[in-house]
Image (cartoon, rainbow, N blue to C red; front, side, top):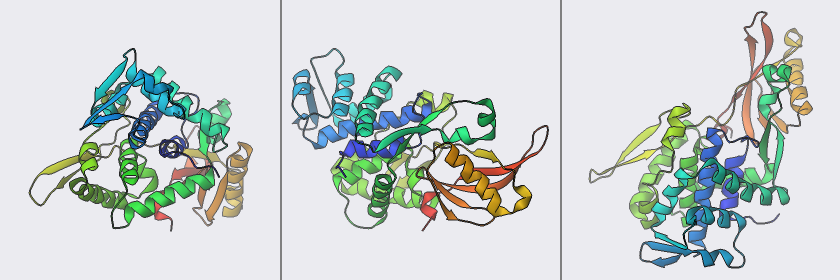
Length: 333
């Protein structure tokens, strides 16, 4: 399989299960972080002229051969009509919080066109389309699905390196910050493990010069978070042995929906209820693996884990079914 760049690997994690047709708040945040990943990738590739902490980039650099399209798209957004820009790395990263929806769409396409052309990203019917209310309303929705084997390799590798003791590479340090800013931490780690990750970030912060620049940077657009009520405040304060506190904000964004699938086999046993659920998934083109059977099955659907919980939907007439409820990936061993 082809090797992808640092920013493209992050995009495969951030885009999985995202709405592919529209730009809801949760995807805006993911694409802003993809833009930040492109800036960090350019930084690692020595694409900026460096003088101390000052980085310079001018329009002539856009013409150099081999510049990835996603880097070009992001750098053009930063340049605007200017011939050159100069500032610190944190300042460049903070600019992505102010990119317009039009710019974000351009950046999204610069990533997705390449990834789809290389068969590691595809558009499929949105899982929410399996929900009883959406099926009956015949609403058409689409979402991204990352290549399953590549997604598993990327996420399992990140989990192993982040949770293990020892030194981390600069690339892993940058990826850790991107996972924090995009809220993808909660896709890869349980709530208990997030505390471990936070503690590890604190240790890295005081041992690594790059971390000192990066970990205090936040690229959230506060209006998007609070106006849309997507932010469930998750803040944690870390105190050093010398008493200096550093705040790290871990925004929690629910990237998946709760899906209710009505079943006809309620009284015919749990196996038949599960069959009704998988039949609906197959009908709408979703990839699934049953990891646990029983009264509350565990199913991996398009790279994300769900419990299928027997539920009665209270309407004018009670409807029996199974509710797909997000399950913390890190709990599965």
